[in-house]
Length: 221
Image (cartoon, rainbow, N blue to C red):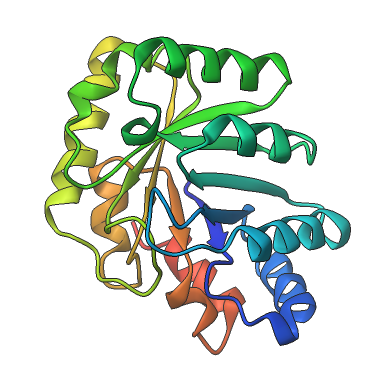
């Protein structure tokens, strides 16, 4: 079963409460919190995303899927662990050092939260193979990290396929999440390639009927 993680990156703050409720009843599976520090990526939305994470935790029964696009990973991991998220994902391009990456994985798992590693479009999957048996999810960025509304980069679909083939070959139990530019036209290709969790933001938020949009994505394959 394909899951949908609804990105709140471009959510209008003025009617956030209502939109979050509407998203929950549309049968999404969790809320995607994109945290950007203005250093690892150009934009900075630290305060806004913390507000959305707190709001979602108070008014929704669904979990939050935290995607850290930050340099100081440790600080934000500690901050978001206090909200008991469903999963925290950090970028391999940010953690860089193997020892640091292993410590982050251990810290998140010891607090009872699932852990994911994200890779940007130009990062080879070889960079994360050594960690696959230790984590719960790989987030494959299908756009350049840092802002919403971008178009999916076609070559990232092949990356998802390669990753899925490797995971199946090694018999590793792990999710593949695809994030960026996913819509009704390309969702089927992304799922067919091997992603089982889709992050959908702009396409979903701009649709007239959240329920029908979610249904169409979940049944498109």
